[in-house]
Length: 132
Figure 1 (tube, rainbow, N blue to C red):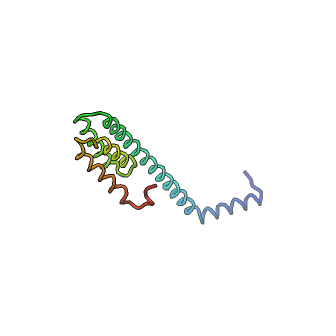
Figure 2 (cartoon, one colour; figure 1 turned 120 degrees about the vertical axis):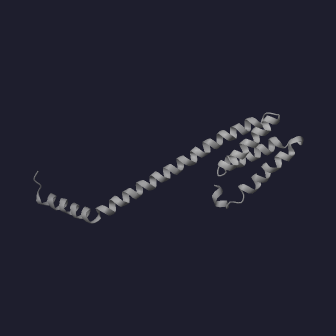
Figure 3 (spheres, one colour; figure 1 turned 90 degrees about the vertical axis):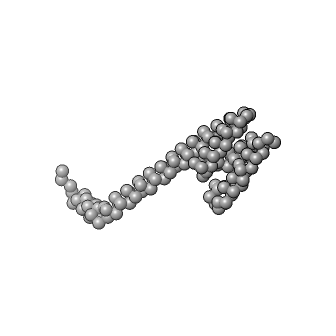
């Protein structure tokens, strides 16, 4: 295909630009794709963690509605899991509150103290800016 003189000059200018800045443009695009992919991956991970924590929290709520030694064991297991594996989620603090409320019965008061102590120490020792 034959190009007229003006089109040929534009093509030459484009080739010169690409020859000078092509590597920088491609590098920028790759870095941008990596950043966007990393951000989306982090969002997915946080959502996945929150969903898993919600499952343990719901199990904790179900156990808190029941009575007996088995429910106390289930409450303690769920709180321990929330604290150890999902401590960065809001469900850990909420779980400590639910566990403390469920274990505050007179015969279980000794079991409620660690849940309240964990709630008061774990989340509030972080800087306020990270609690959003």
